[in-house]
Length: 189
Image (cartoon, rainbow, N blue to C red):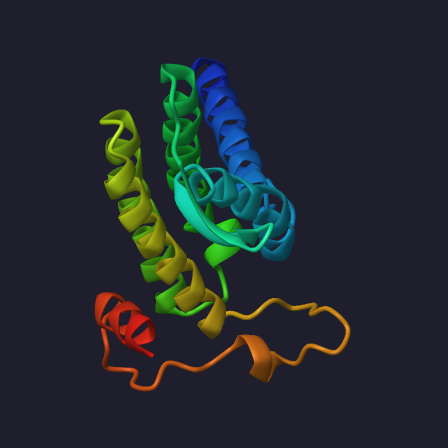
């Protein structure tokens, strides 16, 4: 019997060590890697989305009393790569939002919105890789719609002074709507 214990001791030690490692991994996974959801949005998601959104656009303004229409888009391969990289990063951030560290305690909608960000970011990356300014602009609107829909369901915990939850959050008008239907409805308002 003693020899059997000696034979099993190394195996049991390895099993114990592996369970400790797995336990540590699970604990690390529950800790938000990029701060709270609000911190992640402010420090990661928003600046990354801005790179994508501001890459293509137009503006009409009066200069010295004359209307001036200006359009812009990336001109060089490195500029397009920066836009594509921002789109890829948004998808990565959507994946992170689906981890237990961010999703736990939130509704199923959280997962749907996060997956929506992943999906639209893949389209955004393809448009930027193709250097298709029109597609980047159009998909930028969809990225904005997904973000806005999520913010209506999950408003920030801390709001700037003078801003109320009613100013930034509008509950989904119908819980039976899919994310796509809701985003479409939001766009129509």
